[in-house]
Image 1 (tube, rainbow, N blue to C red):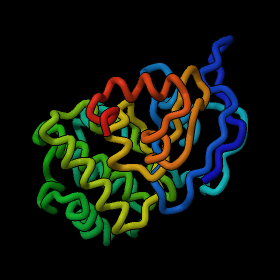
Image 2: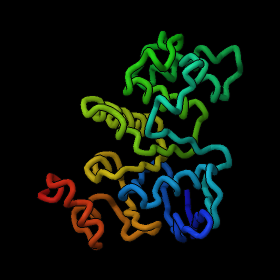
Image 3: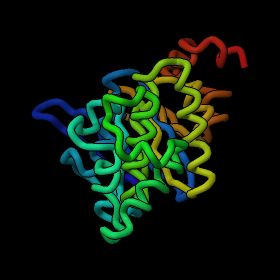
Image 4: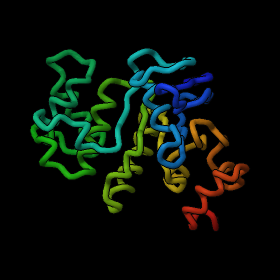
Length: 230
C-alpha cells in the first residue's frame, strides 16, 4: 500500500498534513505518536472512514479492515459472536458456520464461542473476536488502532503475540497504531513517528528506536526508560 500526500482537514484545522508512506505487502508498519498527533485520523482516512485529499493505492476499495481500541463498543451487544463474524465473511451462506468456527480457532478461541454474546467474554476475548471479524472479510490491509491499550496488562502480551502469529501464518499486511514504542518495536518492521499531523521520522523500527534523529522521537523514547537504555 502507498499513501501519497494525504491530508485531512476538519474546518480550518488540519489533522493530517500531506503525509506519504509505503507499507510493503506482508509487512507491519507502525504509526506512533502521542494522543492528538493524527495517527488514528490517518488510519480512518486509509480505511475510507474519513474524507481526505491525496491518494491511497495498492489496496482495493473495501479491502481495508480496522480493529479498534475498545472491543466492546465495536461489537453489537445484541448480536451473537457467530453472527458478528459471519456478517463480514465472503463465503456462501451454507458454509458460514464452518467459516466462523475456523476464524474463531484462528484467533485461539473455541468454535463454540459462536453462540456467546460480547457481554459473556473478557476484554481480551472480545478483542480476539474483533480481529476474527476483521479477518472474515479477507482484508488486503489490516489496521490495528491501539488495540491493546484498553486491555489489562496481563492480556496485552497475548493479543500482541496473536498478531505476530497471524502475520506469519497469513502473510498479513498491517498498519499498527500505538503510542508505545516498546509495543511497536515488538510487533513492527518499520515505524513512522507522527507529530502535529506530520511524519517527523520514519524507517526500519530498529534504526528509528536505536538511533532516533528527531527530538520528538527521543521524547517518546524517554517515556519508555527500558528502551532508552537498550
